[in-house]
Length: 246
Image (tube, rainbow, N blue to C red; front, side):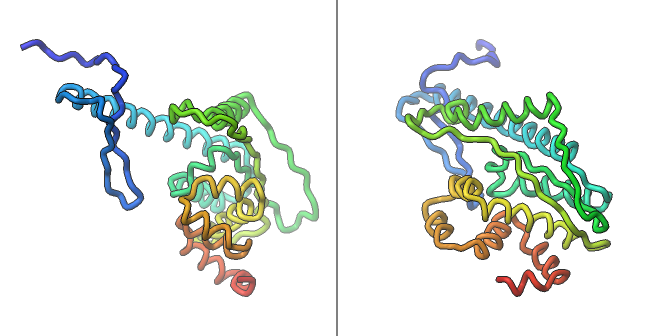
């Protein structure tokens, strides 16, 4: 019996069988009729799994690079708040709406209470510029990921969003994370471009619900999608006025 080699020539039908993970966690296999023999089915499945694994690795590297740049450029004065920010970033990039963050560079600036005013200097290093340029080009060229072409589709822009942190809560990790999540949710839910980015990630039914919401309703909805409702409740215990605004 001839030994099977690791490298398989890719045919036109390769990759037409794909495993798709649904929102409920189940896996669905979709296929095109071109794959007819057992060997072709096996090769398509192997190629599809390999491509999916490579994409997961690229996404994880992209996420870690983005988080590293955010931490490096942001100005956070306390170790406690810095630790909360790192946990927030890791969780939000793994959330159901994490994909939209790759088209944004979030920068966080902690403002000391005793400071009346301050200026912000954003050091854009060559590494940061390369990261921004790469993410923007990928957003503008969806064919690199999907293999499809969308004639006349508007070009996606890359946004630098600055989040000012004007207070924190000593020894209350959940409230600090809730504060960061609240400020980021406000940035996206009250900005026209942010709203458009959110809607692009939603299903048709979710878009219909989201469209009917006002700013106050969008924020808790977005925090729930990101998985920060518990932290939001901890923040409300520290800042009762947030509950009154709902």
